[in-house]
Image (cartoon, rainbow, N blue to C red):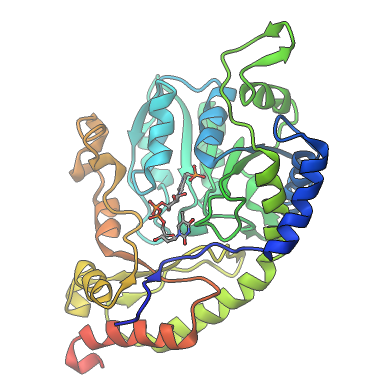
Length: 376
Ligand code: T4K
């Protein structure tokens, strides 16, 4: 067994001396939060990196998404996917909105446009899609549906940092997109996140909402929240940004190695993106078809765990199966067959720049050793 656990991911960490040196600017300024100089610098850098016109930084992605729904005044029902991290669905609850689950596309694993169309009612105010693993939703089709029905579109792009479709940054689609800068993300700022949006007139409202609705010293004009990114996060984010390209190159090499070492293994599939998409390199996910492979995804997960290799079942269970949502009329499993199938097949394997080729070989060897004898 490896001495130390092999984690699904590890955060990029800049040189500690470089970090302390940059922190000196913060110390000298005695300005730690509320839109300081580092925040302003970092916000502009993020805007350029994501190739968007408008961006607002946040203390984490979840609060950013809560504010996104508030800023568009979503209410009633919002159509969403159950194949996601808890935050996506919880954000609707925190806004007093009923999540309406619809099924996913069996290939992209993202919310299916056909299911969206069927789920629209008089109470629907928006669509909340997730670019799961950084694989883009069918943004064109979803945009058409939203236009026809007068709905707003928010994308949870937590996994999609620098994903592009035909050279266009993913943050340019829909009304608002949310990116997470959590340490489990390829790009991070300790904790953090941002919203990107095409309509510049949203900026004042979003920035008010993340600062308690404070207009000035004596006027509070809406019930806002504290969603502000602080200066230390902004410093860390700037330094981590410089490391992202190198990390991507390492991850691309690891992906190639995984694909080579697991190729032709019946029942093991690598979901991917089309040639028009630039991948975010956020996750290395495989799908295990138990019938073809001879063992379930759960057996593979356990076999790796026995060797201290901590792969993760992102995203099992579906959010529609949580106790807080399972009684919703749209949470019934028979309405979500693709989502249930996908959630039972996916496994995120360790994927980060510190992972060695020998570790990838070990992981692939464990998986191959479980396969039907004819397949090895
Ligand atoms: N929408 C979607 C689709 C999301 O996936 C997420 C977050 C959000 C919204 C919300 O965005 P934020 O509010 O978080 O910005 C992790 C992350 O906590 C979460 O941010 C992320 N998605 C989710 C997919 O993964 P856990 O519960 O799996 O984290 P944890 O603590 O088990 O960490 C996973 C592994 O990462 C550890 O085994 C080791 C490594 N790790 C983790 C941390 C925190 C480190 O090496 N260092 C660290 O500091 O949720």
